Amino acid sequence: QYDLNVGVQQPIFTGFRTRSLVNAAKERFKARLSGKSVAQNQLMLGIGQLYYQIQSNMLQQQIITQSIQRADNQLEKVRSLLFADQAIPFDTLEIANRKLQQQILLKNLENIQQILQSQFSYLLNIDTVGSIQEIPIDSLALILDPLTNHQRIAVERRPELDQLTAAKKAQSNQVKIFRSALFPQIYASASYHYARPGVNFFQDEW
Image 1 (cartoon, rainbow, N blue to C red):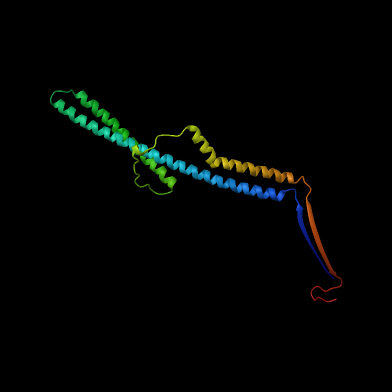
Image 2: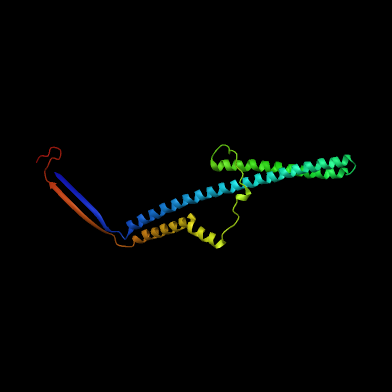
């Protein structure tokens, strides 16, 4: 006996479930892309902050080094006056103490510079950072646009907002998917039945 039954089922209406699934997947993908942009912007922000902290530290070291040099010059002058009995030892002591304080501050800045460069190397994912060129102060643009302009640009360009919007849309589509279960689902089906009674299936004989 030989009996063959073939059936085909095709959904016609599933309560917009398929469309909602596709839309939800698109929005989740868009949210992940926005999340990548957020991570990139955070990385760029961290690199920029460290870079300008290093620049500021280098500038402070330069100023203090010049101050130490001026203290050395003053100390030499006061010593010359002291030898000429035109100054008192307290004057040299005061200048020497000021120079010592500046040297301690310079050493602290050098230690901070090493920490900043280590953090900078970590963000760049390299072993060591090479020499960082100082930015001339005269080349810095210190004039800012009105705050409202910056706020408008931030709202238009920040990927965090796009990520939140995409996540909200994905959640809305997810709700539609759950609601689709409340709709009646319609399927079209077709079947084919073929039978040969008394047939040897393996030999194809009556």
